[in-house]
Image: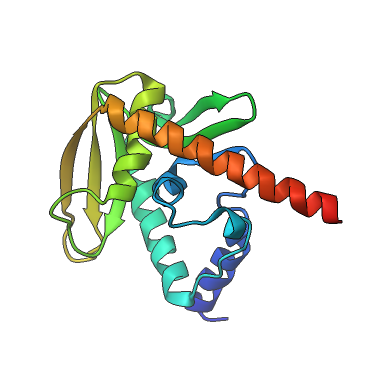
Length: 186
């Protein structure tokens, strides 16, 4: 078996474990899509298949991510975050690093001029949970010839967080209605 095939096979096996979707638990990395209605409640539980190029990109991104995290003690990496919105609704995720300020690591082919909105929404959840006023989204360019990073300082935005909570709550209520109707039919 060629190395590429082995990498893709391992990523295909992992794919089903990524962000397992559970009613009432919404991953911070999906919050932008939920809030901006890019994921519709009726399609939330449909599995998305990733093509080979995407799977390989995830593999490369994970390598960079893991290598950087190894530079810091375990106590400062992969901080579990859980925001209870209602009794049956939460935003969950993991902040990559919590040094002097929280840091979220993102890999990219080319640096953005500003953080992607999906990354800002995700990171806002981490700042909220960690009760921090600011932190950084650090982009790591995937270039085997040269290591480059670009930091974007992000300040906590209370109005954005209120919006995120409101929209997540609305999405959850709509999803519960759909879920309950499906269970009544079966």
